[in-house]
Length: 280
Image (cartoon, rainbow, N blue to C red):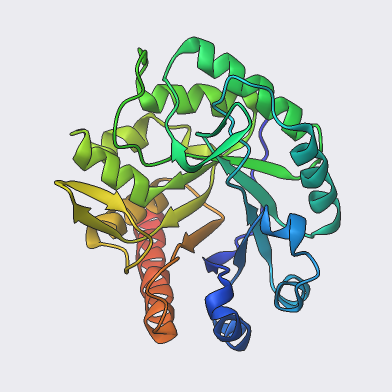
């Protein structure tokens, strides 16, 4: 049985070394901080990170598990992950439903997996192996993809739902990724949301995107769009979530702009909660 965390963290941002001073000085304005899991493998004694971990709620977000690859998960990585989860008081940890390695080589990108029954079984087996490392909750995230993986014969929402349900983990729903995919691949993002196991959504990601090369690209370099805000409002009006994260990896010159977005997202959440209460 899936048990969603009772705690509501609020609205946070991801850690970036470029703005570590701003983050530390403004922790009282931020409800939590997301830290890249792999960074802690080699930089766990970083003073800024240690200060944040000691004074603020944190969640971990990984990039290198390569859940969608054919090869087994790297044992060295799993050992580092186990140690990190045992020493860092994170609320939960998350990873992407993607391929990031092929034959031991890092792709340095999130490559989509084929949506098939065979791939579901493969990923579920890997997820259960990862879950055996720690009692902390694992979340899986949908990615942006600019081409459909050859061989896919299942609907993406069904594919994600089956993995989440069969592995008994939580869902990190990236609304910016969903918005981009819905435009590039021409489907209804609201219908997509309605097909997901809403009770398993623990965290939401939002970010900025740009129209480049005749398609929408996930850039994490600008404020989130109003269309993504509408999706945020829709999800929160339908189910209880535990956290919303604003992802920003570039154009970090104005921390005030980032704090303004945090406050805007908090206002959207308040209105969505009000709407949900009225319906109930």
